[in-house]
Length: 232
Image (cartoon, rainbow, N blue to C red; front, side, top):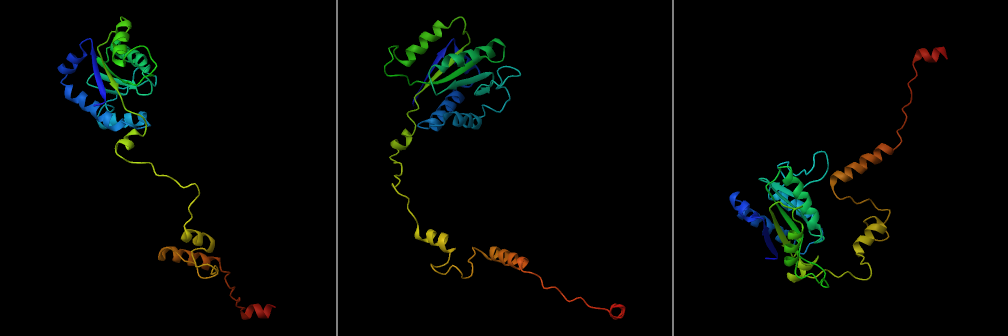
């Protein structure tokens, strides 16, 4: 398991009362499986939460009339976060606090990356979360669960499965059959004037009809009536 769950202000008790303990864990397990080693996490995150029925109830909006949305919402529990940077934790907490103060949700879940700079002198990500939650009181007062994900590096999943990226040659590889088809219209070399080759009977019939349509029509001789000859 490459994520860690931290509960604050009795958030775990609220999850138990809502009978969502297994559901929350199932969502986090699914997100971990879907996002580990991937590059485009934002779109995959939305798809995964949609599949887990966390985006269908229409309660994602944070402020009326504005295009601010939570990542997921169910049973008065909102999910927000980002895996691009740990610092997004403060933005997510503020967004969740707005919904809590408006009486829209009972608690929030914040998902952020556990990866930080190796040169950081602030200790582990877990210790940093605990300190920041304490420092943000009383501004941030809602019950909240923080989930720290270690989703690896983009492409790492292929390395773990023993797969290697295909190596491309330094020069383009030309298929002789394709080159002949391009140069000679699908006929053998030197027979450009032969009959055209078509992939199926329908295509052949279409081209024949097109040729017949283009052929000039022979003008029928106009019949001269006896009355017209007398008048002439």
